[in-house]
Length: 162
Image (cartoon, rainbow, N blue to C red):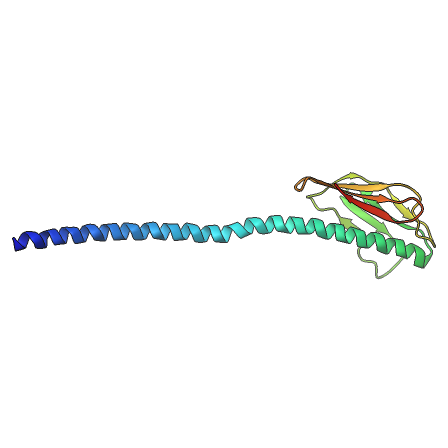
């Protein structure tokens, strides 16, 4: 009888060992998938964040350059302006000869679509723009339209986000 009980003990011990080893393999796979997910997920969210940041940076640069070009027309008493270059997908800012001016062209991010543009000219001495021209950008990812509408005679613009 003692032989039978020790034999049963050996059988139950080996069955438990098999269950433990398979359970350990399952745990290992689960942990591996969890760590892989944690490492891969930020890579996808980082690229979308990077595209969004590029668009916001573009709008910030666009507004600063409009301001700089207009102020240059007043200070240098020469006509300045900017226009869209379709072949390069860039906006070109025109200033009087200035050796410090190294940001003449501003590339439009791929995430934006320029829907409307027109050459904008700021008058010498006053910096006024004498038309109702506008630049309209569409951002498909956010389903937003951003419009820079220039005011007649003042050189100012209004920014609308729809």
